[in-house]
Image (cartoon, one colour):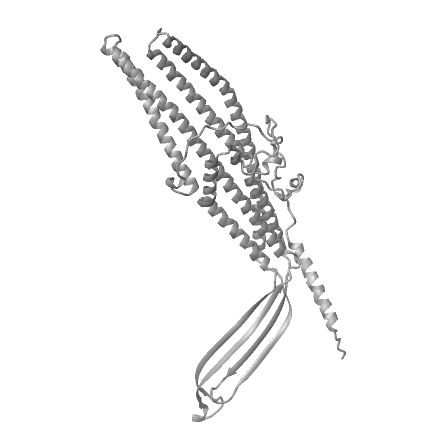
Length: 505
């Protein structure tokens, strides 16, 4: 008889060959690489956008208004807003998930230390087969005993990640972290926009309130003159009723504007996460002139700087890596293991008997997913569905951004056309008041005609203030639609434009 002996080197080569063959066989069972069912948009043209200044809006765009009061409120809001705290917490959690995924690439050692104290009392009864009479029964009772035992050991494992599955998990976690970072920027941009928009709405309400109070005082003076004429029998009593109605209407406008201004302060405090008293005393100031110029390029090259679009791009990257990870779950998992342990037992305390056992080994471990009951396929299909969802959400974000920008531009254009007519009405009312003042000074008319012209001019002042407030609000909305000064120059590349043509879905 002949014996075939294999050298250790040959055994190792055989093991490597077996692992490679198994990997190829199982890898052939893995699903093919499949592109997303939807091709991400790589360009969204927005018609009718005029050119403008490059790099607009800047990062801290609200500081261009040179309003120290506004700057302070925005700083307070950025520090105390609950929405910002939540976004910051989500970002920190995403960073810790990256650390966890990266830690899985490192070897780990687990220690074991146990000790026990035991008691035993053995009593064995039985029958001896084949014995006659009473000789076939027996009893063994060695008595009771106390024992101690202890085990100390360590287990070292290291997943070699030969196929890069864990590296894909790290890349997916990084994508999620970058998405959370962009979502934090999106929360900041929304907060800044809402604070500035609410602040300038309060300024507009205060400016309109000053005009309304002046008009109400003029209405009161007008009513007093009418009352004197009615008592003197110079005017019909219905004239006094009309004067009362006008005064009441203007006083109602004052009350509404006071309430609107107070609500703006309450909303401003809520956005900042403080009480209204903590805002301090705010001083009204004239509304700034809205800067309606646009960047030279407001196509996707600019819209991609929106934080919500950047977050959607990173979600696509993370979902793609999750697909790679799900595919590589079909491949064997190769890891190195090492075990060291020491066991000491005192089976019978006081007898002097002791048992020691020392163990140690090191080697490779290969886990093969032979049968998973459809789990791996379900995980892969789930990852594919997540990618399809991420791509669809990206497309929706781009289309929504394009619509918001186009709507903002159309609103500014409409308001600019209205401004011409409002200015003409204001100029006509101003000229009418000037003529009335001239005739009043010459004694040709009484104060009623001049007060009536003054109230009409106040009405046009209010119309101009409303239009200026709407224009400024539309301008702020456009700044927000263009990303609010967000910059992200390291976004991942989108899939090729023709990738979806080969989709099997």
